[in-house]
Length: 133
Image 1: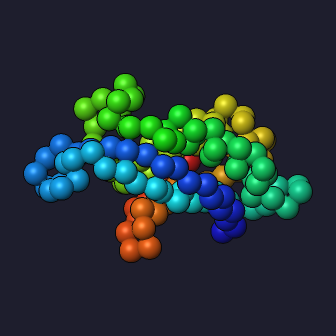
Image 2 (image 1 turned 120 degrees about the vertical axis):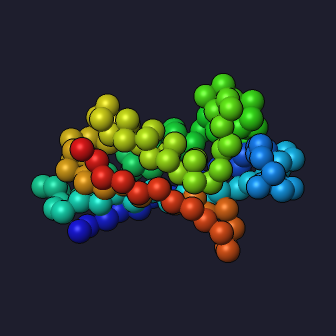
Image 3 (image 1 turned 180 degrees about the horizontal axis):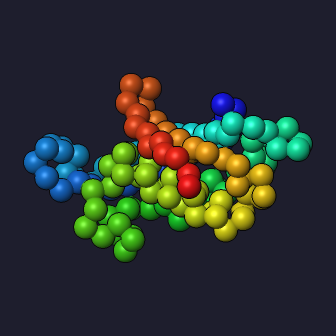
């Protein structure tokens, strides 16, 4: 299996509901390093998994509306605990939509799997990985 990973970052603020979150129930900030990996069984005619430039642009476009935002105030996340795990799945879904819309070119149709990893620190991170239909 071949893979290509692009990286970006975002800075957000949010709070959580529920005693399980302890002090994180208060508004706090996080800086996430976001790694997004594309996997395929075969390279395209140019020996690419996907175009790295297009993949980087698509990831930046997905993160831009979240960057420097209080996620508690965004209507799309109303009533959600925007945990690291939740955000990884959100980014996965957004990238899958970008690929379906053709924003990563025709070679992206051969991608079999995406993995989104959000690193909150050097000791804690979460990811979401899934197959593409």
